[in-house]
Length: 89
Length: 160
Image (cartoon, rainbow over all chains, first blue to last red; front, side, top):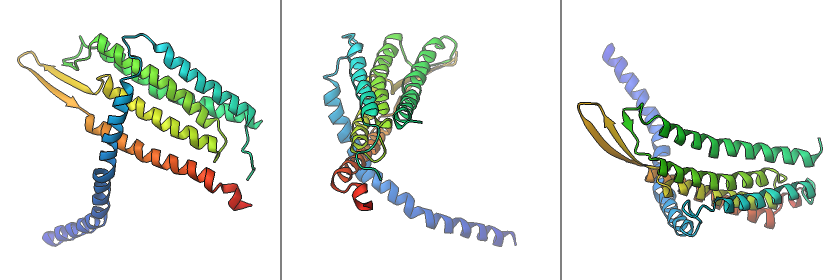
């Protein structure tokens, strides 16, 4: 009886594994095929760009604040001047 | 409420969330690590100079992402403006994530001092950063797709 119960439990587990295994394999293959190479490419590109940014030694933190301020001012201006879409739905 | 003020409110909300999650909490964590080094038996290898560099990059890139998230959230729904700022925000987020690696925040040398024995091991989260970058890259593709859609096939034309 106990053996039969165990066998039943295992068969149920196998059914669940059978259902989720393709999903897991698909997601893993997508990560390996696209996400990881894409990430490495993006990292290398950003690495080349970041080296031109003013670093902590230069003490130019205000440059980043100025850029942030420009985006903030642009956002406030656009939100006040054009609060709606051009054509309404 | 006027749409103008609603947009501004949404923008400031998004910026506030960004400031808390991307500047204040990381800064607090790194500062608290530095304060408790004497009390801990685990030394994470963070020196004051290293933490200063990390905080510099976090504040610098965090402020830019916060202002960009304001601009994105303050834009009307399905507008070209929103799609364009979403792409810029994704790029800024990628930079923000990269500076974690660049500043040395993810290269951790853990020294465990138990009195009778001392051991050091190194933790590197580079692969995690690569996967996160990959996800950001995929988001970038979706953002570009949204922008193209807003130009080529705007929703209002389909509904008219």
